[in-house]
Image 1: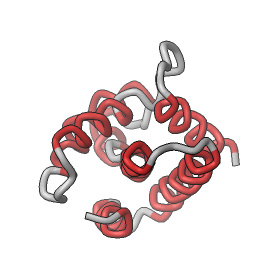
Image 2: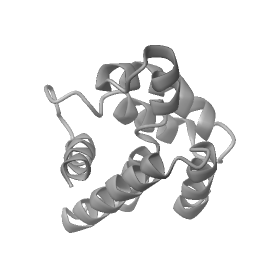
Image 3: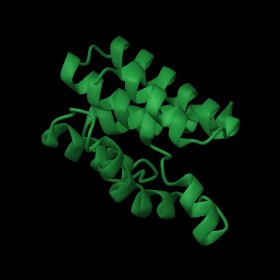
Length: 130
């Protein structure tokens, strides 16, 4: 599945929530630009883009279940949601594993040991600050 199709699927998943849609599009844009400027290989960039699009997939559930979108709740609840979301997209199991790791750690600012994780955290931070 292409990035455009995953974006389309995430927009539909967001059920018209313009704030959520705007946010993940901004995070995706920042992540893609930073990833390209850092010279990420095509595979890593593809995974990063999927993670950026789906990083806040748990926000609707967190609002309903916890009354807020605390980052730690997003990380916990996001892992099974993103796995299910990507299951029928043709994305490989290895790619899904990496995306779920990134979604499950996008609010974790310690222990960052890879460029894709660093870029996702930075892109989300920048998008939240703008």
